[in-house]
Image (cartoon, rainbow, N blue to C red):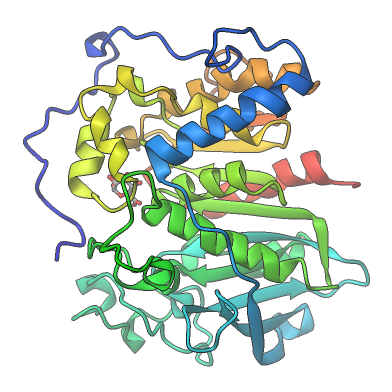
Length: 412
Ligand code: GCU
């Protein structure tokens, strides 16, 4: 089983705007039958459902109807010298204690009012977010990583705190936000096993060996998990239910966009360096292409998406329409200058081409029509930022996320 497959490397990667194919993007405001969408009502009733269904059947795959979750509080204590509390919660994703489950860390700032919360999956396990020795090591499959001392897909003490630069938890609390995080492997281990384990296995239909071509891949599985986290957060009095934010980086940035598109309880959506299958336009084929991603990560999308390998123009949707599915809710697209694999310009263009939908719905859309200078946060309803540096999540990224959230959700 290959977690980080090396095959697919013979596929030519385009890194030059002059080499990109000519293409025409599908118009988010023209319905399948050719009708022009000119009112908010027609968007909500006709076009949005059409687009959602196209993304479900052709790109990410349809997820099953959820079951009511249940949860058990494992531990609650003060953290950061009393600035906040940490609750560790076991989340039963199908409501059953013997079904798929995930450990949730919920950090909340001390507050006499309900607080906004950022929900985000993490890559390496809850124990990697900080040096806190009381957080149990991830139990599920983890990616092998010599640097963190992870062998045989088992988390070890050596990896404690390994991801802390990406999670400035104390600062998030200082800014008045909570953080709810789960290890993504608790929801679906990230390797191609024909969906026997994780959340997919729990919903497998009788007589079906694996999900059908239009049924959920791993990204849709992780997004399903984010929605179950939202179920839990909506049950908590200490949380402002109208200010749930979903954030994700890279493959989990693709996931946060899909979670935001499918679950309107996420009032604000943030994608960081999400690239191909996330915010980047597929038709550009800049950096990672559809063929390349389907070759390296055959389990991320639904099998129907394979039809668009080297055939992006045939896909009835492109990723600007994923952004449009979030409208009129605020969305922040974040890129990194050196992360050319994720096509920063293509990530920006998705925001730009979603703008007509946001404007139809009465918002200010994306306030610029060219990429802004480095580090300048564009904080219109479609937000955009590119910072110097590589594919990563940095403390300055978090400042931008929370500045954007203050602006877009503040005072609600
Ligand atoms: C690979 C993959 C990207 C993905 C990234 C990540 O680079 O090609 O699509 O975003 O992994 O999730 O870290």
